[in-house]
Amino acid sequence: MEILHENKLKFLEEMANQLRQDIIEMLVEAGTGHPAGALGMADIFSAFYFHILNHDPKNPNWPDRDRLILSNGHICPVQYAALARAGYFPIEELKTLRKLGSSLQGHPYRKALPGIETSSGPLGEGLSQAIGIALAARLDKKKYHTYCIMSDGEQDCGNIWEAGMLAGKYRLNNLTAVIDRNNIQSDGFTEEIMPLEPLKDKYESFNWHVLEIDGHNIEEFVDAINEAKAIYEKPTVIIAHTIAGKGVDFMEFDFRWHALTPNKTEAEKALLQLRTLDGKIIDED
Image 1: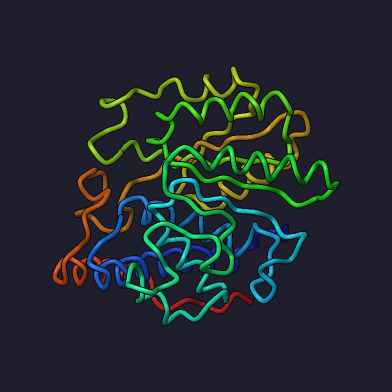
Image 2: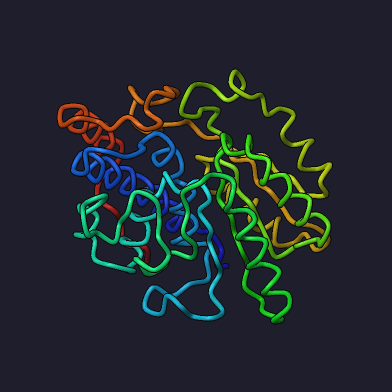
């Protein structure tokens, strides 16, 4: 991974803002979808697709690419936007989200779109998929890294913890999980529905290296990824504290926007806020 110099950091921050605008435009066009989590993870997806991942949009099936598994598939608009902006498919296709016949389904489908590693929908399955891929890399003596993005709400699923035990047992140092710790799920706040804390202690007891970061601080996230790669005796999980609906004031911290799509007026207000935050994307170089 290259050094995160000042110009690149600025580019990543502005790209995250662009991804948020894409998300709003996609969802208002579709009339359905999940804005809160997608907006909250824009900084992390910007960092992944434009700095961290070893990948090639022109050769999506390159055998030595890093693998990014999206377990909480309902936030796929942010992944679709990142893939399009990275060059996997035309940006114009983003407006086809959830349309009949579109490759951009409501949850990612592996065979429908380049750059999608696994199909997702039912929560709690992504970590098991990522562990299988990481084990395969070890057996094949491959050096690619596997990343798994999960929501905090899906930590309620028992299969997450079964998978966590297995990864700890086999000391999968080529696996890094990222938990979107935005404290909301579809029916309310996580600590009211099914308390997760002490989340860090739970993963540590399963033999994971645990880091906690500000999920909107790209530099901090990149540092955490670098630390994860330096841990040789166990898998790493990064608990990324994020704000659901980040960047749109009437969506932030409000669990009702988990699956509530903005109407045209709300979308215009949201886009105005985001476009006020910064200007056009600067050139990466």
